[in-house]
Image (cartoon, rainbow, N blue to C red):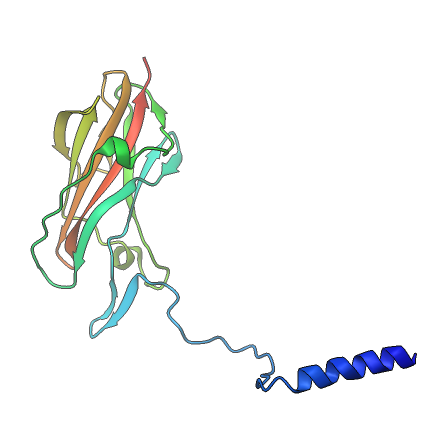
Length: 184
């Protein structure tokens, strides 16, 4: 019993002499902005980078690789060049689709702090898609007004670069890479 009292006294003496101020636990939440994607402005909240772009295939969602972006609070020129989509999608899962199958795309909000989906996910003014097969550019088309696009008829792996532009409430550009495999 004396050993236990001696040991507890030693521990008490060591912890009491550390010099650090001990604060009792509280239930108060610190007022910090946890999401790095928003900043306070005079007009409310503004995104600091483009919203997430999502592709849906066979009721399953995929996030394309964000290659490059420039995102400015005011209209300023951007000059984005995209990388090789084969390199950007290396290691990414390749969804398998049928020839001509409809592929859905959506813009996803980055933050939960906005009151409505429209505020949190500004719609791009244009989405230009470039499709590659075996490293060769096959076609370029625009999909901004449609929530879907069609898989090609040619079987094999196809790589895509999506070039999104915002020039209304937000100003910026972003390029995303994605790949899919068309069944034979």
